[in-house]
Amino acid sequence: MEIGEKIKELRKQKGWTQEELAEKLFVSRTAVSKWESGKGTPNIDSLKDISAIFAVSIDELLSGEELISIAKMYNQINLRQLVGVIFGVLDLVVFSFMFLPLFGQPDGDRIRAVNLFVYADILEYGKAIFFFCFIFLSVFGVFELFVQKTRNDVWMRRNNFVSITFQAGSLLIFIATQQPYVAAFLFMFLMIKVGLVVRAASI
Image (tube, rainbow, N blue to C red; front, side):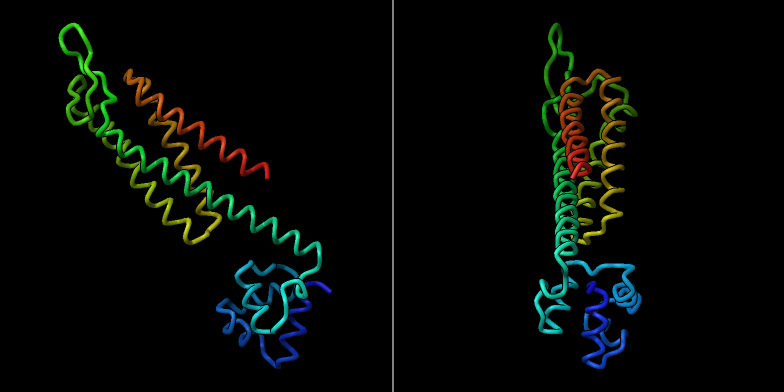
């Protein structure tokens, strides 16, 4: 017997409607309907609640194949969440680039390493673009970390795409303006992100 049929049978034994079960599980009636018709599967949290409400173990609810499938899905979600956290931390670290001596400032016959606030060997609008790149990535990093708490898979994927795209664009800007130190760090962070996405997609 599939999990949807088991949920339907257990619900009927209690004499509950789909709406009543949905209220007890804090989900929509549509979700319960999809489970019972086999068009959807409860997530881990819902499975725990179903197990507690009907006083049955999760093993009793799931067949062997369903248990493996849900465990795999749960592992994928956890992995994507971990990838999102790493993305957020890397983007937040970029904020520190404004304060680190990563910019070459001509000083007579030599070049002195200075931070972005002191750096003057560029037009003001160019400096503003540098600040924008760093601030946008760091603010977006905070947003990425916040999204991980929602466990929204669609937003996680979109965030990864935006983060990689904007960082690649920023990397090109710093390469074009001959900022090797910043470009090297951004390139390293970009390769870490791409590697994590590829790794997560292969599992």
